[in-house]
Amino acid sequence: MAPKVDEMADKDYEELVLKLHEIEAVKFGEFKLKSGLISPVYIDLRVIVSYPEIMLRVSEAMWAKLAGTTFDVMCGVPYTALPIATCMSLNHGTPMLMRRKEVKDYGTKKAIEGAFEKGQTCLIVEDLVTSGASVMETVQPLEDVGLKVTDVVVLIDREQGGESRLASDNLKLHSAFTLSYILDTLVKHSLVTEEVSGKVKAFIAANQTHGASSKAPAAEEKKTSRRMSYEDRAPLAKNPMGRQLFELMAKKKTNLSVAADVGSAEEMLQLADKVGPYIAVLKTHVDVFDSWTEEHAKELNQLAEKHNFLIFEDRKFADIGNTVVMQYGGGIYKIADWSHITNAHLVPGPGIIDGLKKVGEPKGRGLLLLAEMSSKGTLAKGAYTESVVKAAEENQDFVMGFISVSPSSWSCGPGPTGLIHMTPGVQLAAGGDDLGQQYNTPASVIGERGSDIIIVGRGIYKAADPAKAAKEYRDEGWRAYEDSVNA
Image (cartoon, rainbow, N blue to C red; front, side, top):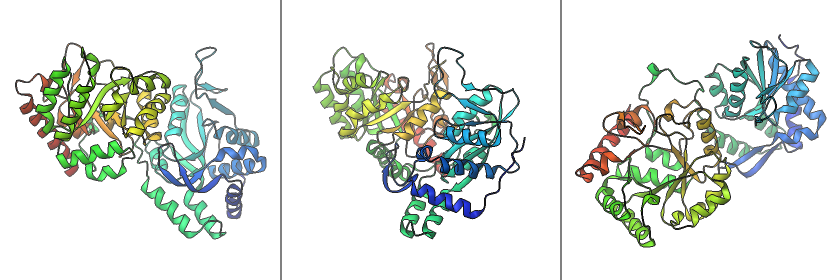
């Protein structure tokens, strides 16, 4: 059914902006976001629940934007939009559904609560949209139970790419306000200066989310696309180690990482010295060695300085925050003391990032999150990958990138351009081994799959001449990079 719309005049929207400013739902100053960025504006619509009159006006302002839109039920995105959707449902008689943010492992175990029929159309209600990611998290479970989603209504569009992201998934965005409208209204009433307004608009323009469609592209649509250079991406990296790696790759003209999966520390050091001139990163697994000493760590750092490469201990942390604090900073390996980069699974939740950050950030380290793995039958894909991307976006001060396989095909897009993608399982010929490892070529990994760094193990350390093999892989990887930049 199409909603009966109560008209709202321009002055009503203008007055509502002034009310939102009055209750500090929109603030100006310097605010540190989850991503680590310092923003000149902060929008906190949770406060409106304490102002019933404003809550009602907010819901009516959004409803008035739905003229000509047809839907049977509505669902608010947890949690801020839930009271807004409730107001709209009560005032206009449209049935409401609720999405559980955390599905229980007991009872009905439903993701969507409420009365509905398959084939009905559901309107999504959200407080504001930035990238559109939170909306898409609600779209999927609704579609999974047979509902159709075609429209999304929000109070504020931050104008950072969310509308185009939703449009790419055939979702029409209806917004009561754009952030530009709010700024212009506040300037008009002398509540914000032209200088502050300009600063906010510049920040928004410089921090577009560039969201990609959440629909997986068809195989025939895959092609090499033009990419930003490492030099241009370096300033976009919020993590110092990530920025250093971009700059190193550009200066040294290599996007090769060698996986030193050898049997002893001595073999690893010998390999590092041979391949050092050709690599950007040396990936280690020191927990497979019979012995590891401070002297080994010191020698490795000396080689890294000599040949200008970074050290990445492939630890794959996967425990709760308090445990990884001890594992990362202590034990017999003391990884944080000598490894520039480490990585972690997000299975325990975002608390693992907080724990590792507590140890690594003061030392200037960087963290890679495992978004995908190159082994056959991996469970690291789909919704898990999307959750990893979201966590990375919110923690860019410490998270520097991902371990990934095919970021160009991710339903949520490859993430911010300041984050690095490293891909294992690379050989000069595609294929696999008898233990499930799948191999892709440098041209495929860099040019088609959208990664930044190729990780090569057996193709180099088992070669008769590891240095010669490293040079060959370095040349192939760099050629693929230059082709994609110049495409």
